[in-house]
Amino acid sequence: MIVSLSSLGLGLIVGYLGQRSRMCSIGGLRDFVLVRDTALLKGVGAMLVAAWVAFGAIRVIAGSDAGFGLLAAGTTPSGIAACAAILVGALLLGFVATLSGACPLRQHVLAGQGRVGAWAFLAGFYIAAVVYTSWISPHIGSWVL
Amino acid sequence: MTAGTAAPERESVGADMGAWAGRWARSAVVYGVAAAGLAALVGQWGGVSPPAAYGLCSACHGRDLTDWALNHVEGTKLFVTAAGTSWPVLTVVGLVLGSLLAAKRNGEYASINLGGNARQFAYGAVVMCAALFVGGCPTRIIIRTGYGDVAGALALAGVAAGVVGGALSLRWAARR
Image 1 (cartoon, helix red, strand yellow):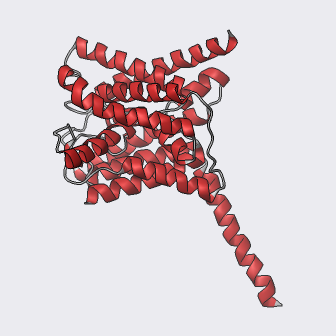
Image 2 (cartoon, chains in turn yellow, blue; image 1 turned 30 degrees about the horizontal axis):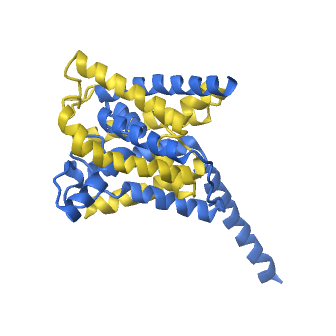
Image 3 (cartoon, helix red, strand yellow; image 1 turned 180 degrees about the vertical axis):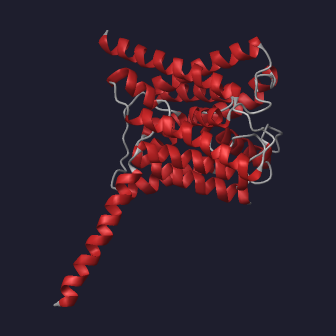
């Protein structure tokens, strides 16, 4: 119950701010490479720093099994093959998301403000979610995470 | 006469407040701080927790929602993270509704068709598979890197390289 309410509230706030600020987590670097515009890149940097500060504060206040070091415990990839797989998957993610024009979160925002292409993107997105968990993920296993 | 002068004054104070809030809402830095801070809060005290740093993700939460719906309607046994097993994670619904609300309030809602929708469909499918493979959409990869996740930092480096490559290939295609 609380999961649904808190995630819906988070989505509403982030969706509202995302529509107003046109923020996109891959758009920062893309705009910098294409037109040397750093407005969105500052947002990405702020998100990174804010996440670091917020998780650090929560670890101090509430404690956590992630430990107090700079790197969280239990998140290191299992080996060189896992590292390579993550790098290749992330490379594909960044490349195709740039071609589609926005990161997945920004596509949700664009869908909300009436972009038809974003609805087409989301259709492929959710069909692929079911396809991935039904047929692709069982063959890969969870060794990457 | 006093009442006549007082009312516009209060209105202008309200308009100032509105303009101030609107200016702040348009800043990408405010978005970044709000998204990361709220994601950490929701992950710790909002119940969206069993995977670490799971507060905000459009790919994983979308996967959780579709798989939860299929599991409940069709009786399938698709993978759902522990956070979204009993009650669904509604972040993606909130994202679309919040953006719709913002666009309607500010007169920016418009149904625009830029074409290339079949291509966007294919891009969406590839992006979802890649995002689930590396464990998050680019936004969650940033948040995971802030959390101290080594795999997340690695994925962030890969995404950055992919974005540079994609932007350069877009420029190459535009200049050809």
